[in-house]
Image (cartoon, rainbow, N blue to C red; front, side, top):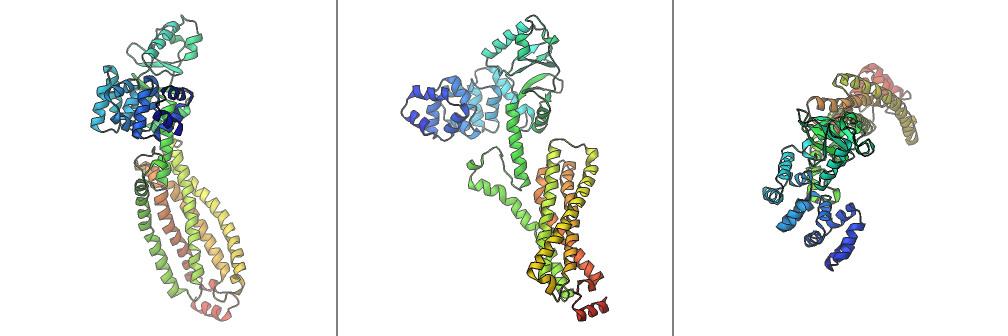
Length: 485
């Protein structure tokens, strides 16, 4: 970055152009991001128009916006007209009206202006908003030689060329696709219609998530975009889809962590302290308020325990196990929720299989719960043996406490697994984003209900069999317990 800055300041234009020719565009774009506004404008003024336009398309949205605002009209016009229609539309998607007017007025080609407006009419989550419309289209009756001549002509007209070319009829309805190597190596007089193959297409109104799913199933670098009447409108490449997948993955991770951001594509290091705080504080407040339910449950049961069973059970030991139970519940539920949410995002489930998924998670919960029952039983034996409470307690039968807490843990795990699968399935049923309703809501609900389950089993067992809680060595207390029972 210091190198490019020095070249600009010294006005060493020759070395600067050599730097551009020998450096990857992504590295140049990163260096430009670190320059001040004056240096950025001067940098683009020095470059050839073609190089400037290509580098410009790799910059972040905010940087591009500032540059267009600072460019002179002639520089704006030269760079804007070198950009493809979808790149111009991307720049204008969230731009203020004065910037939109400035850019559109810089486009000297009325057809390109029409294409830009066509892309802008789609919502940002629709395929039409990211499709490329400057492409080379072939007709079914063309020969391979005619097709190659047209591709060369379209290249001079700045069309976006990919490995595959789409074939249409006279009405521009999509018929299929043909690979570049077929056009080059087949008989020059062979007709396109005899070589083309069928290809899956995407609707302009399809969601970006759906397009990403289609790409994952296809082995092509580009797919055609059609309208409801099957007319070819544009194309989408893997470059655009990879960016969509990254943004969606980031957005889902943020949502599952209870982080609400306006634009998940903004890198962390470029987010202001204010925006980070704003994105995280909402769900933390909601969770804090939601944890009041757990507080009420613990307080009610503790008060009841102090009045009813304090003479039989050490309350401090009793309450100390609660975080272990609730923590295990939260972790178990989060595992199910994350797995189900990802599978739903990939369309791995059919709606008719939702009940099967639910019962499958309950069975998984039972198996995991049984394993944790054994592990927790052994853990508490070792824990209370080291502390000496297992042998020396005159108040609490720790063997019963160990069994009760382990059994409660197993039930809590089953409940958490069921809840972890139910929340994303219910969200989808209500046409909400499963990622939003998963971890934050799951954590609050599982904490409260796991506490209820643990206290209910423990106190319920005491009320039914109070003599179980008394150590065998404490004969007087044991006799009293039998009388009460």
